[in-house]
Length: 456
Image (cartoon, rainbow, N blue to C red; front, side, top):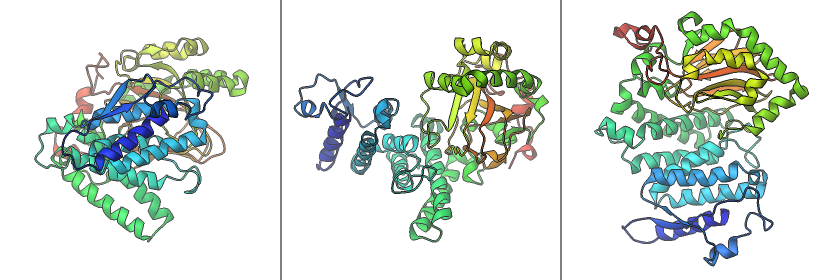
């Protein structure tokens, strides 16, 4: 399959060099990968593929950049979630092919979005010649910035006159937010590590220009954004509540009693902590790790190492995990009583225990809207923190934090011991459809009665 993508790259580069204003749809041969690499290694099928002898279906690159994004993402996923990922040569080849597609995107702009998202999702952290594992892979992210900007132009997402429905249909709200996120983080990284360098000055200037355009687009202007950290995906659904309360609801803007899940978590702290500790005592923590690896979800590269961030879920999308609920029955029974979790139909809803290893640093990212997130601190060493929408928060054992994880946020553990929390991704209090039982004080939480209540 890696060879197939390389053929696709060469085809794209070849067609891109032709003076042809017609369709850029290309036939690409994509095999179904084996669970394990075959005996010939990652390039074992290359000669058959190049001769056209392999019985694999044709998959086109098309003028639809969203369709191309899905195809490129699926291709990278097959390697990232297989043993091939741990083969440095294979993973380097995947990166090389993405760079080739990035070069081709200058002539075939429908490739830009897919390559940009793949570089952000799977090549955010560096290694090798650029630096150690906790450095940002600046060259890859500079390429992603360029490609996101190109994808914005391709879909005319910088058109000030575009109607709002079309803006969302073309996912312009997504393209712009990821461009701003990456540009901000790369600017910060360069300013810290290469202050005054010409590259740093240029990237900072570009980032400021991107943000100036972004905040003045009609779709975003209503939110009166002051910094790149002020935007969230939930504001596309519940603009009043977001404007009023901002990224951190509990404890910054209100006490735990105002949000039912926060009070629930704090009231049952001892049960959740005891269940976590009982799980950690099995095989000296080995059981926790086993449950993580055997039930790993398709998460992208959050931290530089796979075990930086290790969630073990009790429930996802309203479905309880049988083995986990046998291990921690009291916690599962308590969670079944919360409609924000048990009745929430969102695929991204759920709850579980999360391990953050010492030295971990999670990349800035957005959560999936529409939802909210709550943390109950169970075992928290010093020197751990989370930054959400530009606000820094620290966990305190026994206390809940309720925050909007659809703002850009990042987490770090600079201590020498792991941090454990219980996380809840739950249906938004302003959403009376998915949770089936709306928050009792939803009107108070989700409406702005006058402009003085707007949080700016």
